[in-house]
Image (cartoon, rainbow, N blue to C red; front, side, top):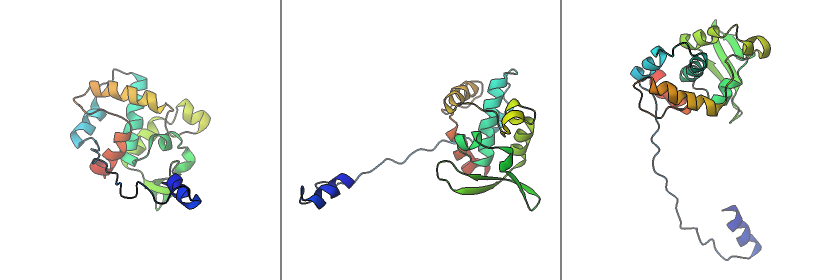
Length: 167
């Protein structure tokens, strides 16, 4: 659109040949976990596999907070604030650069507490263990295989689960 408008402005075109063209996109089917699927994920036996436990915890944390993957990975203990005797996450979202104050639900606080002695917390003061988004999604598929969840499990589904099931 910008190129065509510039061409009109410079006199190379008389009119925009695409002015009557309308784009249409099919409605996206947004996947999310139901209460039952969320419960299955919380209770699945991961055979003491620490990596799969970390992945599940990171995913569940985003289910309870609605955070994007990178925002969850960047959280430090300084992001935790007490407001009216309740614990909140106070963050500037990476993608939108908007400030958010998110009340922490008890399951999210439990996950934060679980990693209080992790090397990420002790050295870098991070709230959660660090993993890449790509590896997290690979491991999420493995975790889904251990449950009855048939949906293609990716970290982004956690945001939709927060909006539809948790909240």
